[in-house]
Amino acid sequence: MSRTVPWVIAAAAGAAVLGVLVASHPARGVGAVHPDPRPGVTAERVLPASMARSAPQVLDGVFCYCRCARNVGHRSLLTCFESDHGSRCSTCMGEARLAADLAAQGRTLDQIRHAIDQRFGS
Image 1 (cartoon, one colour):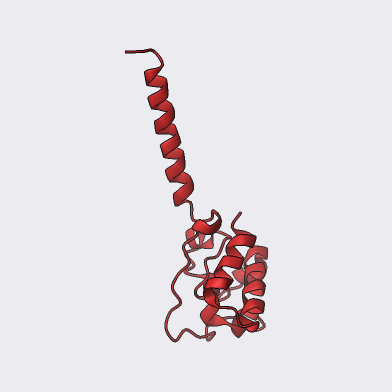
Image 2 (cartoon, rainbow, N blue to C red):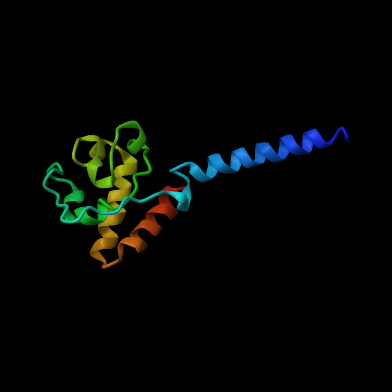
């Protein structure tokens, strides 16, 4: 057996592990998993004076790139605005502003998700 074979195997294994980690990381570009909007969701629980109140069904279908799903247990971008977290977080505010603006322009949820992935996912 050649002395280089173990190094080739180790390099291949390391590349495979790295590939799995990058692919499974939820906040990496287009690989983010957006939640399905809940049927009949409203802005009822959203704090007042929030742009999230204008498009709750859209924000409920958008992944939040500030990692609050992992760190705070938020389900979607909409849930960020059910506490003061959304109004204090520049990522949440930016995503919500973009989503609300695009929704007002008549963009579909898939188009909005794509725009958010492009801007916040890298």
